[in-house]
Image 1 (cartoon, helix red, strand yellow):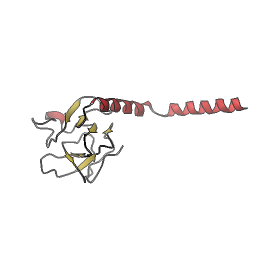
Image 2 (image 1 turned 90 degrees about the horizontal axis):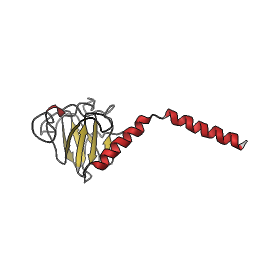
Image 3 (image 1 turned 90 degrees about the vertical axis):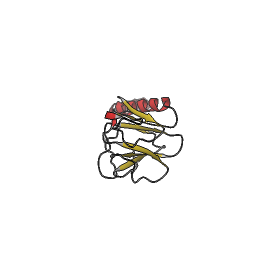
Image 4 (image 1 turned 30 degrees about the vertical axis):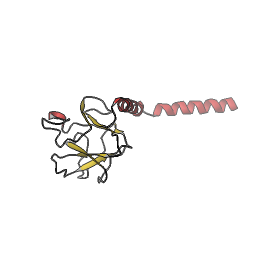
Length: 152
């Protein structure tokens, strides 16, 4: 009787494993690998999910316009980010905006050091209600405050 119960339990657990999508584990692995390979102190964005596709930019600094021809993000980088990473050396937050300019106004959200990365920005929103995915146009580092924080 014990063998039958043990076999049934093992089969039940094996069946449960089939229900859990591999994409979650793959996303975690891809972003964890990227996180471990990036130098401390940087913010990074990719045009693909799971910290993949084309790396749009990597910086220890800020960039008030991802679409211009200066700074760590340039040209077609604006409004393309689908995953982002915070590997800051301090507890500062990366504040992301869907607008440009050094007045830092408009819809925004933040990525904290504790969150590390967002493997997908789908389902995330700026304070203006605009979806974050493919809508980031600028960023800066801030110590406190934000209004909204990305959360996986």
